[in-house]
Image: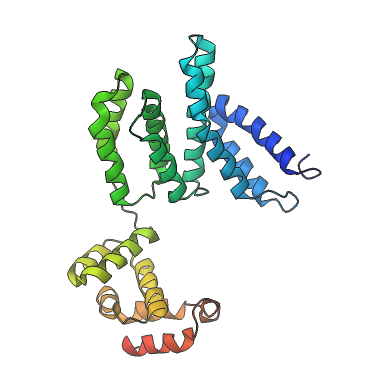
Length: 276
């Protein structure tokens, strides 16, 4: 149907129907994420990831309307429907994040909107549900995780619902930064810190615990882009001549030339500094 007619109006109807499924068929959430991925990658359908992510953010913002509906009803069915619309949207956003279709910036916007000064028990529950999901592939930086942990810890006594309070007390103990040997973001965080501190012993010790080939590749890319000579000694302390030659030989200079002007000259200068 969408291949024959994929106007904005039709896509909005599709997303509305999809969210009805997302809210009330939560066991199929991963399938709905895959469906969205197929949709924005289909060559015959005029739909991109921004359209779907924007729709998700819009549904998340609609939670305030659902909270108002909750405050005005005592009907069990209406309470269930409104809660599922709020929590179901959060669960879907979490699934988009762990599949890496949603970045840290959007995720932080979502969490910051939940952890405001006027948090309700439902906001706390939504945060709990979201964090449990994203913990499978949490790419947030250490200082951001610490910030959220402190907010929850400081406010946990204000939660009325004892079940949610117990769940969050358990959660904060698990909210730790997971260092990933293959996390380029973490490697680049260490690189930025070294540029400030110049602490050679610390960065070498840190990098020795990571996947060395990935680290060396990132350091070489940094040198090619910035030509600082800052990481020459780090590279030499982390690897031997044979492995370094292998990594250097694997670099596609023709491809890099698109983004880094005069990269071949810079590359030769780098090899001279490394005494290769």
